[in-house]
Amino acid sequence: MIHQIKNLLEKRAFGVCSYLGQKMGIASARVRIYFIYISFVALGSPVIFYLFVAFWLNIKNYIRNKRNAIWE
Picture 1 (tube, rainbow, N blue to C red):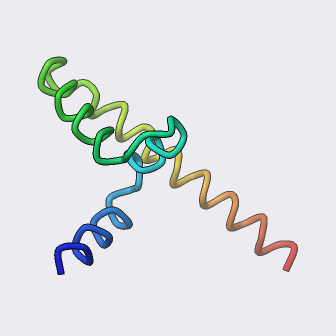
Picture 2 (picture 1 turned 180 degrees about the horizontal axis):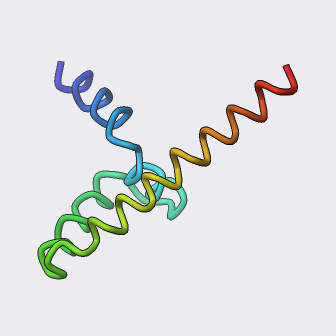
Picture 3 (picture 1 turned 135 degrees about the vertical axis):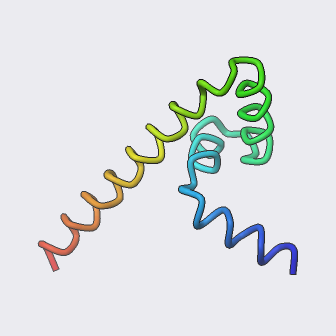
């Protein structure tokens, strides 16, 4: 049950931490914890970075899906 909720949240919550963790080769849970710590230290300014990356990943997936639709 907990595993299903965790997977659902990871898929629906933009996937920024899992993407960054995959690119850096570390666990996404560790990226989330570091992000939370940095947000407290920097008074929430990393939230802007998070939203920018979420927007960028969304646009990247949109463009990738559009290109695939053209060639099919």
